[in-house]
Amino acid sequence: MEVKVLNISGKETGAKVQLPESVFGITPVDHAIYLDVKQYLANQRQGTHKSKQRNEIAGSTRKLYKQKGTGGARAGSIKSPLFNGGGRVFGPQPRDYSFKLNKKLKVLARKSALSYKAQDQNVVVLEDFTFDSIKTKNYINLVSALNLSGEKTLLVLPSQNNNIYLSSRNIQKAKVITADQLNTYDVLNCGKLLLTADSLKTLEEAFAK
Image 1 (cartoon, one colour):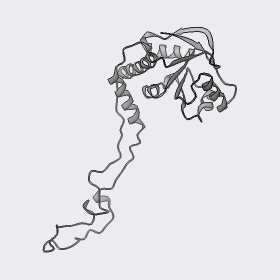
Image 2 (cartoon, helix red, strand yellow; image 1 turned 45 degrees about the horizontal axis):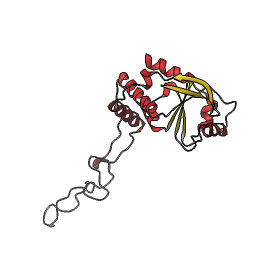
Image 3 (cartoon, helix red, strand yellow; image 1 turned 135 degrees about the horizontal axis):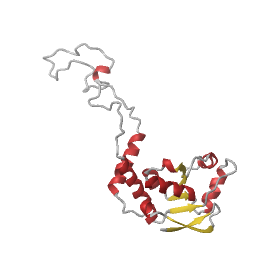
Image 4 (tube, helix red, strand yellow; image 1 turned 120 degrees about the vertical axis):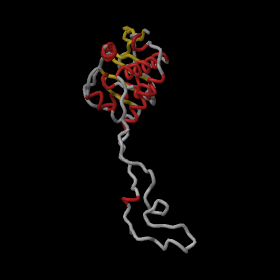
């Protein structure tokens, strides 16, 4: 697929680039996408949830009332889960939610996500650029020039650029990452995928390995 290269003013530069078929033109595999997104979201979970079991509750250990003759059910501890303030049965305990996925499957998932974006014509290629200073207004002007105001955007840079990253950080629907940070969830979660010419080459080289 051939895409026109735009500048930061949103105008065509006259250049065109070919999105590599091996990355942006494969037949997407939905199950691979599902597993990769599931792993990404699982890795975000802290897993620090905790409820107290009956052996952790502070309370008297005396028998509440005599075993027989009350007409009620027998009870031996105020810490029983049956009583208000008692321990919880099978409550949440701290745990690690992360799980392993094979590298080839993760690569397939990312290629599938990128292919979906290309099919929907939601890939925008920009000429390489930088900002002279850190200003949120610079990034707002970039998004406005591309007619993407109010839309979720993901800008992929070939390497870390603090001027661009920090200029975008206060914008709610804008996210900037480097090519080595690309993940399936971010690609699917954005409305438009913005790539620079160099980041496109970096992605092609990374997925060719």
